[in-house]
Image (tube, rainbow, N blue to C red; front, side):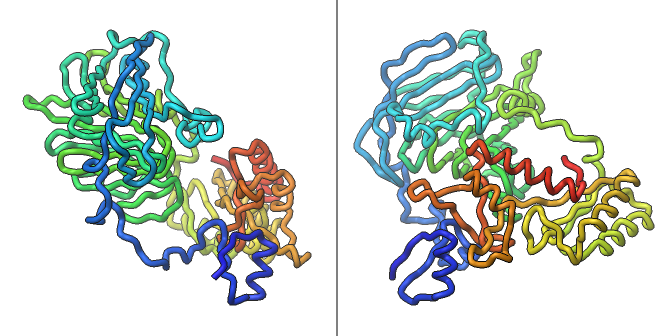
Length: 466
């Protein structure tokens, strides 16, 4: 059986010919992928390699002080274990006391070439990277790092004021392979950890929980990743006498990863990138610490505060799939009015579009003129309208002139879509409108093209923006 990846023209031809000798696959996964045989996750597989048992860890050497911390070399302390990839022999350790309440620990390969740098170093233009304030040193920090090579490199983070241990890899090895990174921190008894969003779960994560992260729309399943990944947790500890302390840990990494919360420890695993940790003291000016201060240190200084929304966005929003036409929409608005229920914003899903294609209007159910009148009526009543715009862009059939779709053509002319780096062909997937492509947001022309398409459609459908 021959297997190959194809462009859209060849794909259409192959599908129509249905040659029994050729299995055609698309470069992105079809929805039917869920029908494939299930595999046992590594965390539940009793015969999967246990990296903590079979890997050697690293030895630190050549420590050099810097103005706000130190650097050191990490060298593989024994034979390769190749648990889930190829062990990287030489690493670099960077420790930075960045602000009074934030300490950075980063571990990455010592030898990185330009062609593979983004495999290990997450660019700051993609995810904000906290920086040194130019003043803080080890002597003025709320936090302190100590380390040992006995028996391999291990480190721990503690409070300078009280010595309270916040994070410790003591008793565990650091694993660094080209497709698998792992470290383990010891935890206090019956610890209380919150965060590791987005997932549908109790507010407190518990001590027997596995959080798997993918930056993808994977549905709304309990204990499952939803849309985004926020690899940060806040821990609150309750002490004798009724006082509490709080601190935070942020693992800056955008690749697939898992946080395994177990009775006495938390294991952090990721498929690549680097260990890029930021430890937050959660301390206030008076020396106390709190969850609120920890959250403030994370949002203000690590990932950035969210943009301020318009006042009306905090009102009641109504949205669902299946509003069949403008008359149905009008009855929904009137229903709220009759029941004396405030309705600030009305949304539509993809059923307003012609065959689910972005930036179009279904001429039968949501014709432009009537739709404009409906939206103008909402605005006149102090209400707002927002459509859902999916990221998938329909690919028209090149053998059918009547199947024209200008938004695709304009993007293709600019080369904005995600490509196969070896062939230069666009990646094609199967989504709501059919064969689709997606913008590559690392290509400079993509934002201008996307903005232009939205503006052109807004001129016909005057929606509001958040």
